[in-house]
Image (cartoon, rainbow, N blue to C red):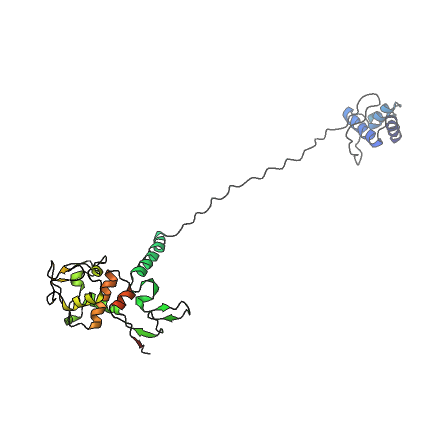
Length: 291
């Protein structure tokens, strides 16, 4: 059989294994022995007894070629069962996951935002209206030398010495008085200098009436009852005008009188602290601090 298969292969230009494979396929399809199929293709006599032998597959099947060989008699050989070739599945497109929504920041609490605005505003306001202005430390007691960076008192003396704060002395007299030596000024002129039974000091009114600190001090010391003229101040206000009489404070020391006048002129009249301090004859008397 192999010789016949080789003869067929040589005659038609096919490989021997292709001829054998086709013969087995034809034999299986027609129910004939493979020897009969080979003999018929080669034009040889069918071997005796071959018709009763069923076709058997070879132990190791030969791979099928792309096309089956043509039948020597002109028919196309059966190439066996059709093998379905599975194409590789197309790569699935990557599934895009939805982007997570951005997490919103809770932001700052409203009270904290308000604090960022209010606190600097209050600091600026204090710096503009404080007795020492924005150029010195708390209540005029501390400054930093811009050349050396050393802390010092506002009058230039070395820090560590107690400074007499006339502004604070004047504020205490204005708000609380000094017992039997005179009632509080705030009782008539208001705690904020806005006036009451006495005239108002705010909006520069007190400085307008008394452009000179010495005249202001004299008026506070004498009062309206003992004032020698019919008018007082630069605006010639009537001594016995509307409102309560102005009591005199002759029992206050010159330093106390100058201090309360300093407070009124700076806190309510808007006069510069340094200017008022010099005009009222007050100097920072430094004494060595205890301890």
